[in-house]
Image (cartoon, rainbow, N blue to C red; front, side, top):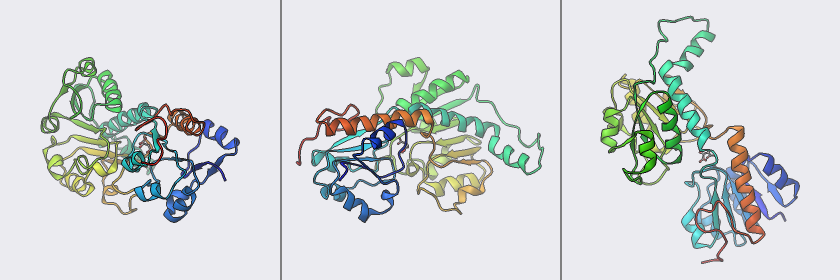
Length: 324
Ligand code: MLT
C-alpha cells in the first residue's frame, strides 16, 4: 500500500520523481468522491492536496496513520487545520512559492480592464475594428487600493508603483509603520477610506469568517464611479450577486475575477453577461515556474515527515505529535 496519497492533479518534476519512487497513489480525481477519499485516507501516511480536496475533521478522524497534510498552494481554507493540529498531524503548505505569479496576474487583469483588452479582442476576432469604442485609461497617476498588503499585495503594489500608481492599503494585521509600506510610499487606511480613494482595488485576503462577503453591495456602492475591482484571492470574499448589480447599474468601470464563489461557476452566471468583466478559471498561481516551486516544496515536506525529519513549510508544527 503506497504511503503517500495525491488527491488532485498535481504535476511537476518533483512529483514525477516522487511517483517514480513507487510509494505514491496518484488519484487526481479522488477529491470528487468523498467516500472513496475517506477509504483511501484510512491507510495513507501523507496526503498531498491542492484546493479542491476538503480535508475535514471527519476525514482526519478516519485517517489513523496520517502524519502530514501537504497543501500544494497558499490557501488553507479547504483544510480543517484545527482538527489536524488536534490530531497531531503536520499541515504544510507553500505560502510564498506562487505569490509572484498571482501578483503578475493581478497586474495583467488591471491593465486588461483599463485598456479593455478582452472586449477589444473579442470584437476584433468577430470582424470589428472599433478604435473609438475601445479607448481606455492609463494606470499612471491612478490610486490603487490594496486590501491585504502581505506577500502578494506587496508584490502587486511594488509593480503598480513602477506604473506610476499611488498606493493605499488596508490590512488589519499590518503595523502602519511597517518598512514595506514606507518602501511602497503606501498609506495604511481604513477600508472605508480605501474604497473612497481608489481607482482600482485589488484584494489579497485569505478566506475567513471575517472576510466572507467582505465585498458586498455597500462596498461596491462606495467605490468611485468608474473604478475597477480585481479579485485573485478567494471567490467567497465577494458577493457576486451584489457585484453583478453594481455592474448592471453602470457604477463600476469593470471587474476581473480569477476566483469564484462556486468553482466551477454555473455556465449561466450573470457576470458572464458584462463586456467589462474578465473571468479566468482560478489560474493566478498556475504558471510553470510557480507550480514547480510549489510542488517541489510539498513533495519535499511529505518525504521529510515520512522519514522522521521536520517539514520546512509547516503551518502548525514541523513534526507529527501523535494523536491529541
Ligand atoms: C493558492 O491558494 O495557492 C492558490 O489559490 C492556488 C490553488 O489553490 O491551487
